[in-house]
Amino acid sequence: QVQLVESGGGSVQAGGSLRLSCAATGIDTRANAMNWYRQVPEKEREWVASIDSGAYANYADSVKGRFTISRDNSKNTVHLQMNSLKPEDTAVYYCNVYGIRAYWGQGTQVTVSL
Image 1: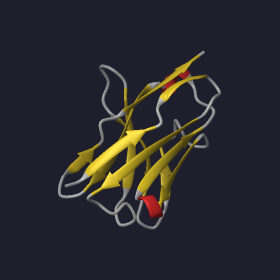
Image 2: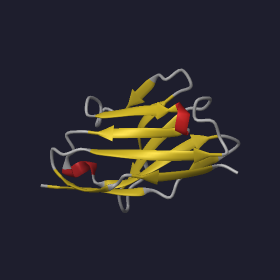
Image 3: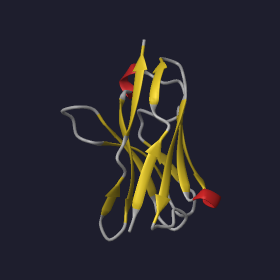
Image 4: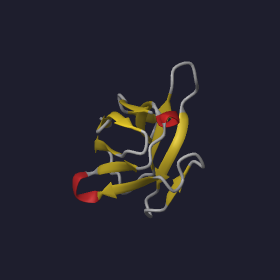
């Protein structure tokens, strides 16, 4: 059974940093493309970043240059380092992987204030 558990969210002032983690069980993060999405109330879930099995990373334009996705193979965990945070980054952040279906974590809240 695939399970994704996010952690690391919180409240920070604009310009600050947070590091999100996604601990995976039931699936090998090295062999699958792992993704981060985010969602604010009444809006569709938005793709943020991906890292594929070859460790190639891709980012939404809105976070490029500020966010970094990475994998810790020893812990089967994916991280999202978020720097220079802006109020518009406020959202619930979800970890995702596509296997036989889409798997999602429970989400972690990130709040950025002025």
